Image 1 (tube, rainbow, N blue to C red):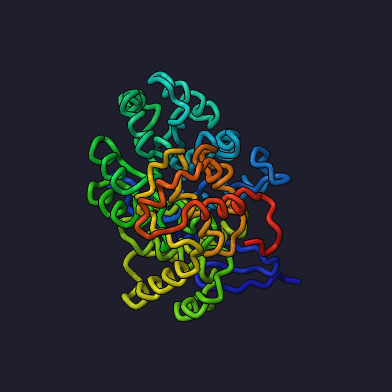
Image 2: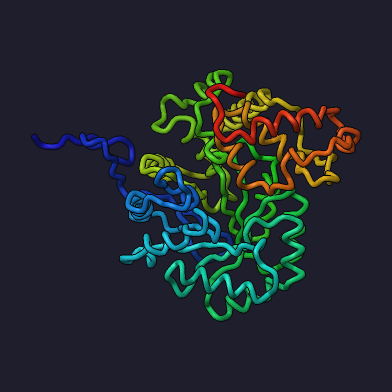
Length: 414
């Protein structure tokens, strides 16, 4: 029997249920560079794995995912030294064989926390060039800058090394990814004039978190390309929305969209003209297909004022589900024992705000440094004296650690 096909918007659905996209990728200016980036970038941090082992990438489907995205117009692939327990870069190098390396701009990152002297810059860069099986990395980032790491970067004169690597054509453009408060972001922009791009966390729930909306606009005003990571907040926004939020999603027309609330959340990010590229860490071919469909329809400045008001209402509804009324003001820091109180309480809140039990636990147990976790609290009480919200921080930290440290939670254990 002849295969039946039917066209829907910019893609075709075949009777085999496999989606084949017409090449209709949208492209956006990349800061001051004479290059147009695909609206969607391929992030290689969450590739499918075998037996849930991050160091064992399921290479055949992962390679097909990456190549499918590239075939449909994605022209930016991002990885980093530590991804997939330090085997991610080598996988990307293999996946980009057979001519695919020539079709994309390749980005990776210096693990600044491992650097002890300036010469380490070239030591790590040479390892990465070998892993990626390339002679040139198009976009090279200083990874996960915060206040402490930026001071280390300056002290070791790492930017001088980066400029030498650029002059030797080992790397193309210099940027950084960021995880700290806006004031630190502004400091980093101000103290080094050679930045060409940056990577920040941004989504409709994180407009005031870390660099936030102010950082997005400031970087763009300086001519930097801005790459957005975590557009779905590590997948939490992609989880089943709480019942409280669903009426607003209905008003936004989520039920009429191919990808529902995920499609809306991604398009909210793309609606910002300052965004050069949205980086998505995809774990399945279905996610690749859905994100391609959203990217193909993406545009800036298309949301109405009423639509943005509905997103504000939805953010407020999510916020109302918070367990602890922490605003992240930072008055409780620095903790004498080193606990990262604002981040621990944020992760604790995330368990209640989103239908995702795993992501906050992954961050707490595998991203947060051990000395920053709640079990390091000595109950000195300095934080509670400083807290303008009068939160019972000590008890909240105990409760947070009990839930977040449990990597195998029972169903409904929140």
